[in-house]
Length: 261
Ligand SMILES: N[C@@H]1[C@@H](O)[C@H](O)[C@@H](COP(=O)(O)O)O[C@@H]1O
Image 1 (cartoon, rainbow, N blue to C red):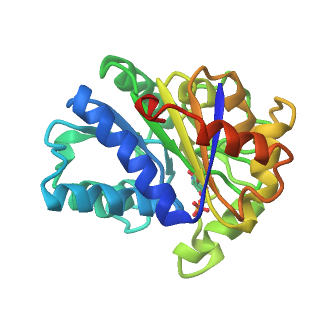
Image 2 (tube, rainbow, N blue to C red):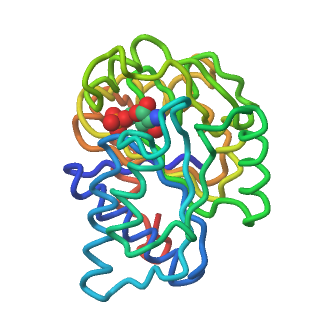
């Protein structure tokens, strides 16, 4: 089922998801962890890094893979998602590029790079746990509204809203690429466990549409309704428009601890 967990704040969400990743690594040290970029998942990466520094988590065999990427940024651009993941995830966890899988956004042949990435994920054994954020318009990865719910990794064009949302990472709006490579919704749904973190009032509408709205390509994150093991972790502000929040709180409060997320 789609489980909704309401946490007091972003830090608590980060700790909870880090705990689930630690439990995964304990039972499968060579797990493949799918990571998302953006501001929201940073508390997860900080919580993981703190465990590694404290010596309570060993991620030496963990593998990390990328959800999406800009097309056309020069190799090594600090805002390419490959660079961001290197900076925010791999380095703090003490992992090298040999632990990393991602599509090549600088390729001359983008369709081939997309197909190669889908094949690489499959031959790596598939994603064990995929961290997701959500766009204000309900996108996951860079699957913008009206993306096919069966889509594979492919090139997409960003909406003006997403380019504006992401302009804060660039010197100006003009520098935000128009095109991206993203795991398709069908690709994302193949991960064994999907964990979406959403924080802040700006995500409340998208979260309500994802959890309580109809399954619809217009709200790509609503595809999580199709997944047998999807967890939505939200802070109070992002949960504000959920009609069934009392039920979600009661269900989680009564959950046996051994089940984890
Ligand atoms: N491609 C990323 C998404 O993977 C991310 O979920 C979204 C939300 O970002 P933030 O968490 O910064 O709000 O931004 C980008 O569009």
